Image 1 (spheres, rainbow, N blue to C red):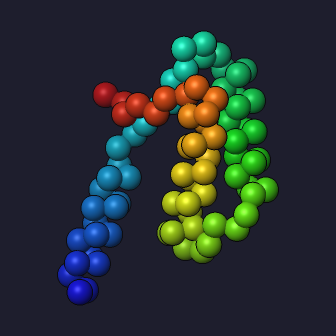
Image 2: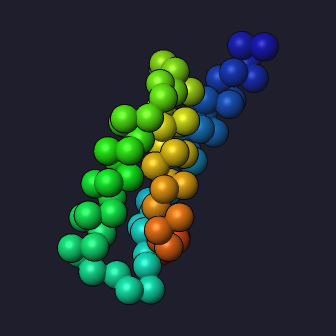
Length: 78
C-alpha cells in the first residue's frame, strides 16, 4: 500500500512538471487579466474545497472550468 501511494504521488508531481498556457481566439492581455482575475475571485468566494492536496486540486478544477466557460483552451507548451 505504501508503495502504491508513493508511485501515485510521484506520478502526480511528475505530471505537474508539464507547463501549460491558456489560449483564446480573441486573446488580449487586458481580457486575460480580467477573466483570470474574475475566475480566481469566484473560486475563492465559492464553497470550501477541503484541505491539503485534494482541496487545492478541487479549487484548481473550479478555476479551470471557469476559464473554459469563457472560451479559453488549456494547451501544453512545446
